[in-house]
Length: 342
Image (cartoon, rainbow, N blue to C red):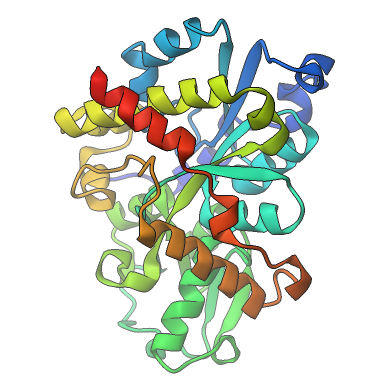
């Protein structure tokens, strides 16, 4: 399905969410003990406010209702168009209790003092590709030497570009780096204001479907793959372990359902107007669901992310921390065991 380039501009305006308009001032009840409600923030991938991953299955199959009714807690799923940085801000301020976000913002938030626990990982499913304009002759980063390449500093796309440059024996000094978010990078590519962009997700698939030149496809290069995680405020976890168990159990049940019903996640993706072809491009194995219990490669990816942030001075050395100590897999292990009983 072809799409007009104008969709890039419109998508950035759909369902714009600001912390001040969505969240009321945190109530004292959370500081005093057991919560009556839990706010879970997630990155609004399509800009539609509609869930297109296993959270959608957990909702539609009633898993969230079942698990949270057992403990008398209300679940609020909050789409965040501000992505990872907005989730970190809301966690720090207490407006969110749980956040689902990418590896770079999750690690950055922890390093910068947001007191969280990593309760689950997301799997190495996200990817960013290097894309140039339609009909351009570029076939490698060496062909883009001296050219303008746009992506967001401190995001996983920045890490991807750093890895890909190093693989070619290049550095950021060999290109003209333009620091903008993914949406703006795509818009600048469409309007011809940059030579290439490093983007992922629906931004990537929309450019792909319109015939833009994929210089480096993340599916063919390990440097283009990244992960994510589910994090929660430490104080909230300590006061509400039953809430964490209920949330992850619903997610584990939804993951099990997705594994048994191959087209379910694709159907959710298409429900927001994205094409089946774009889903197959991003997730050819139909596996856009989390690890729940962290796999060694997912934890290693987070450690590599931390090393990248330190190397590029995106965090100072005194902000270094142990990823192994950050991760507490007991809740995820409980959830997977519970899901297996269903």
